[in-house]
Length: 198
Image (tube, rainbow, N blue to C red; front, top):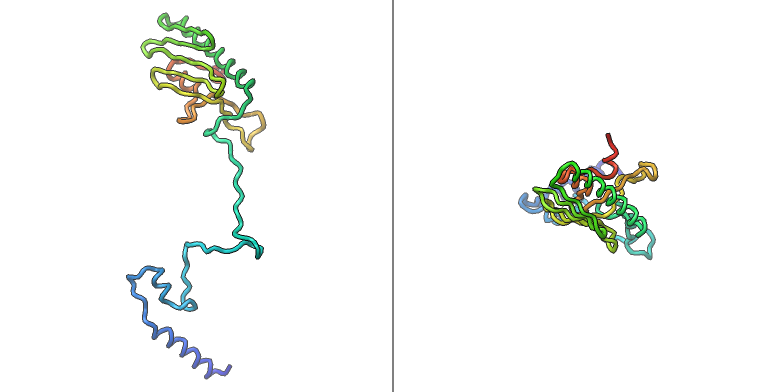
């Protein structure tokens, strides 16, 4: 292409762009993009287009579902035998700690009968704690915090830790309260791993 011919083509292109009326500023971006030729300005949009998959005869590829992570929102799945073992161990330790508290304070009364533990702790009132095998829970009725249902949850077992290094506790899943923490706060009784600390 000769120089005069290329200059003439360039002038025509500039003239065609400059003679086009400009879109008013008060129009939206999509309206301005619609009023301009596609080769003059390229407008970007956040609206996705419906493309087919990689292969010609496939629809849009579906995303794989992620594997559900075990969080504190879910109880740890345990067998009924393990539930009974953990719940019985917890309640036995709780009964012994509550009886120690009753020996220290004369007005505290502890009664454990048919799997139901009742602790009368003035001025708070009476606490009732029992196992619920059908749901694999420990239930607590507290005069301060109300009724709660605690599930066994393993805390901290992840890929970054050694297998079996995690610790578990009875957790109320709605507000993530630990039964051990609640008993320590309301009754001053320490149960579980915390009771072994100096």
